[in-house]
Length: 442
Picture 1 (tube, helix red, strand yellow):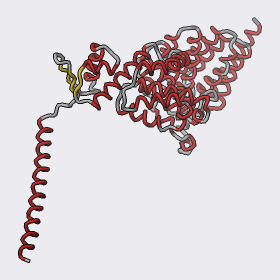
Picture 2 (tube, rainbow, N blue to C red):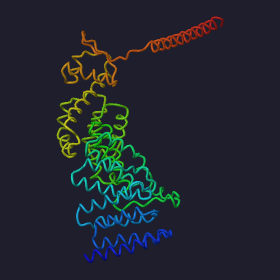
Picture 3 (cartoon, one colour):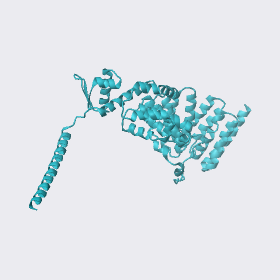
Picture 4 (cartoon, rainbow, N blue to C red):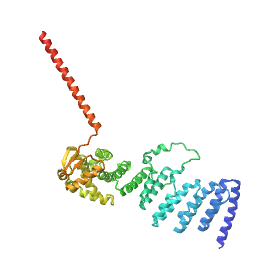
């Protein structure tokens, strides 16, 4: 009890010193007195008194901003020294309440919330952790380092993905522009900063910009995997593949390139997919995995691909990839792969045939007539193909129906060509008669 009494008397005397310094406007003195009070409580391991003093000091009339900032920063160093988790949470909550609504300690508040969210997550309370993190809009913090901002937003995205809140995860991920990862950090530092808007250095535990780039795209892969958006997943892997540290290490880029190939084949046919397919085939590193090169070649070549032969050749690779990715290639992927091969084959047939019977089309696709008709209809509906089916006759017509303007234009072109030929013929006849007349006169 005597120790407690002496602690109270010491705090009382320091509070008087702090009051004099504060009223005199002495910033350094006020900061020192406030920090000394906290240090006394910490050394005495009086955690409840420490929390009370933080609140008391922050609420004193005309308290200086610098003193509150110093006090919060000092108390944050004590968080890891707390004896148990309850004390730690209590101290963090006290500091949160003190820093709430104060713009000069917004960065400290963000870091405190992040620590509290981590504790909640470790306790299995993912929803509470995600809600806590979403309270803070770090993108508005001018003084926070860019890498720390990105890391904080990525943590918000991860927690939303963990609680399967995909809509909010997408909204948060849009706060990060992918172009920010391509910025040159050496040029960033050359920007002049005024004394007021000084940007703080990021803490040592924050990853570098390139590490954050990888984390960002890994989170986006998780997001797009939910909706089976294969083309976007492929683009994410392509961005990971472009990271210098990945490109220099074969043990890292080979698995990524394999995934790029698989997701390219799984993506529906469109201009973006064709562009990525061609750029991937031109990649010299693809020669290291010739099996996948032949897979891409089959998909890009305008020839009918036999599904059974392709599946037998790549089934083991596919299953291996499925296990390696921990289920990233889902159960639906095998069905989607077959569908893509059927779509490819229908496009090939449409290139070589103007009209074909449904029965012959089904034979070429190795499907029943009903299945062939269904896949063809799906492609027409999605505007991947133009075709008409005459069901009574069982004939598919791949020719595009021309509009009246197109027909008139083609007629005009044909007439122009005809008149041009007539004019040339007349010229030749006239030339021959002139030569003949000249010969007769001679």
